[in-house]
Length: 178
View 1 (cartoon, rainbow, N blue to C red):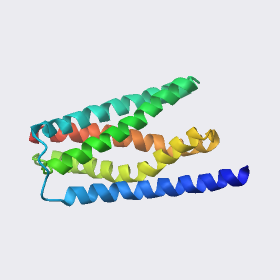
View 2 (spheres, helix red, strand yellow):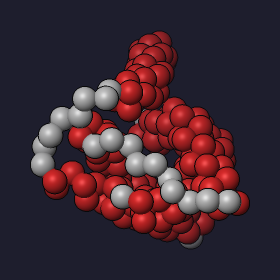
View 3 (cartoon, rainbow, N blue to C red):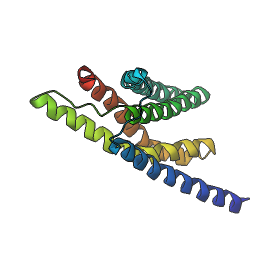
């Protein structure tokens, strides 16, 4: 039984590694495509939807933390699963937007421009770091390896929260230029 679990864990970790590498590569390729697909003007609302998704994710993460501190494990599980699904919805909307629209240039000047780029660059870099952490943490919770889940979430949670919140901040800062 233990051998089967180790093999399954190895397969799962390999899949998580592949996903953690494939998603950023696909996103980078999509961002580099100059010829955009025309799916209509509705795609212009996607950045605003992405801002809402990041806001909801941030709230869900904080609520999930509150619930686990209150030892409300079942509610915590549901809220964190919803936050995980919001991450997937974010990714779909983000890819769809960048497939159909050119990237928006930030138009601010002076110190605010440097603040924006700090927020944006830290957001992007940490999103690359947090993806495999969240996938692993979620997996460990699913297979009821709660010690591993807790150890990993000490790192994954604050990074995920930072990425979600800075996503909202970057959106609010660039919103006037859409």
